[in-house]
Amino acid sequence: MSAKSQRVLPGFGLALGYTLVYLSLLILLPLGGMILKASELGFGQILDIALGERSLAAFRVTFVSSLLAASINAFFGLIVAWILVRYSFPGKRFVDALVDLPFALPTAVAGITLATLYAGNGWLGQYLEPLGVKVAYTPLGIIVALTFITLPFVVRTLQPVIEDIETEVEEAAASLGASRWQTFVKAIFPAIGPALLTGFALAFARALGEFGSVIFIAGNLPLISEIVPLLIISKLEQYDVLGATALAVVMLAISFVLLLVINALQWWAANRHKNSEPLEVAAGKTKAGAA
Amino acid sequence: MTHFRKSIATVLLSLVAGAALADATLLNASYDVARDVYKDYNPMFQKHWKANAGESVELKQSHGGSTKQVRAVADGLEADVVTMNQANDIEFLAEKGLVAKDWAKKFPNNASPYTSAMVFIVRKGNPKALKDWADLAAPGVQVIMPHPKNTGNGRNTYLSAWAWALKQPGGSDKTAQEFVGKLLKNAPLFAAGGRDATTTFMQRGMGDALITFESEAEMIAKEFGKGNFEVVYPSLTMQTEFPVAVVEKVVDKKGTRKQATAYLEYLWSKEGQENAAQNYLRPRDAELLKKYAAFFPPVKTFTVDEVFGGANKAFATHFKDGGTFDQIYVAK
Image (cartoon, rainbow over all chains, first blue to last red; front, side):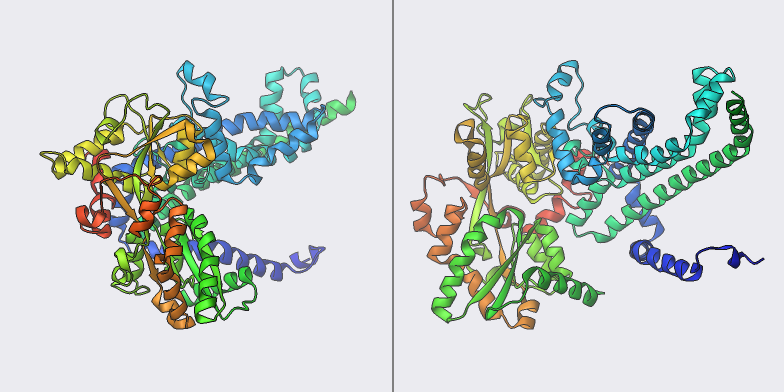
């Protein structure tokens, strides 16, 4: 039998064509234009712009704070997703809806709100500053803003995956004598690991490009709390479109490599999981069935 | 490409505007905080034009960051006139051939119908006794300002401090750079924009002084109450200009040169000048300046042309990559 006849729904060719046109129009065209513009500069000039002391510092600030924000969300987002799927409690729907708010809120509003909260006289800042913890107008503020903005990514990617893991898996692991930690590490984590990585990657990618919320809380001091998007705006203020494009292209290249690495990791984790799944789950199912 | 951009801009505009029934339609691309000025000014001009030329004219406004607006016009936003808060933005349009090369001479007063000045806003009672630029650079003082490299407001602050230091006995570019460096060290942050700086200072209680436009002080009084702060006029500060220009290419294409020119000329009329004064912008009209003296105490000012040889030169020396601002932060 040919592959064609195995499909229930027709239209592969049309749908693929549509997909390619759609993606080209939305993603490849603007990115291609950007790279074309940047190619007006030589490779050496692009490097010169990217390796300036201020740009280097901004790249460091941007990538480190995005990584930290995505990591924080990977950990706490997992807990939130777990709670929202596995337990029912009063107001659960409300909490569930809250998770999406960072998506809906204009990012500038988020930045201004967070800055007000964490400033020395803010609701939170007034208790933190006496302890020597300054959040608003420091690099820490950048991490707070990015954590807020990227929260939904991890939670929303994990929720359906956790829903798919039946509680029997936990029960089976427990009845096979697994400790609670073993149950989590050996039975649960392999199943949600790939989704967790996806959520992490999405959060990380989103954080890299974030501008609106960060500039209101960062303080924007050169070498300390300037992010790359701010430098790009700064170049545009000088009518230096080429310089701005150069920074953008470098940013894009690094992000692309990092996302590729994360995707490879995820692929590896998924495959490893696939190979080990039948054994564990089958064992669990049989045991559960027998019990 | 530009055609494509132009048609998109036109489509968007006509969607926003709907059908135009007036004899002529003018679009004024303006800077962000000019909303109030032109909201009051536009009906005045419409009345004036109807009475004098017998034509009804529809006026549309587009507001945004000055540099962003100019970029939009260069990319095809069909604005008949631009009313900005930085001369170098209009210079950019002149370089692109959209605005006359001698735009600054097409209207009186360097084509700036009104001005403002950079002032200090300090806490009630001026507890740190901040009187002049030197006090702001003293150890232990915190100064709030917008980013000097990325905002017009921040650049005016930077240049004001520079010019003051330059005019001190024994002042040179070297001493001025040292002084501005000291002042910037007293900035715990660089705000994203003028209004963000105001919020940081007034609402979040950060800093001992905020440096901003004189016109902004009245806005703060409206928002936060007059008794909560004091305005300090330093011994020398920048007279900030708000240059206007006709966008030649657009008015030629639309046939609106007459109306566009009249629209800008009318800014210098008694009515136009009084409207500026009522929005706390210093009118060029000497009589009106006297009438509103309570708003506008005398202050010694300089213009960018006098001290820095023009807005473009000032920008290139101080705010381009590798300029003095970068030198202050990056040793290389």
